[in-house]
Length: 149
Image (cartoon, rainbow, N blue to C red; front, side):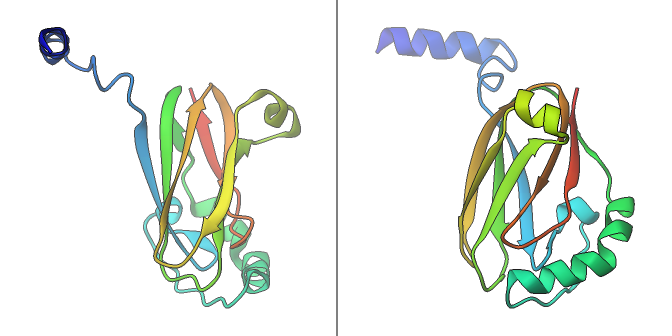
């Protein structure tokens, strides 16, 4: 017990010593066909009962939306991408990967599904420098850009 308290006291005196090892949280909210935060916080109000609806919406609006979306920039390190399904009536997921074929082979990736309406799911990853994209293949969204440097 004394050792634990002594170690805790040392970390308390060194700013950032504890948080440096803990992952940073990046939160996203998915609505039909989009990640709200990735598009400037604007819920575009798309309606979708299935993934095919989003494919048609993205074909019509995707290039413009990606042109307006800002590239997210992060530093290398540990992260948890926390994704919330805000009332999308079908299962969602998340996929973060290298932006090009070469980068997909060299950079870490994380993916998963099972994200039903009203649920939140965490996707932990340790990011290395490089160019990434992230999306939801089940709620087809554009490939949003992320740069780690």
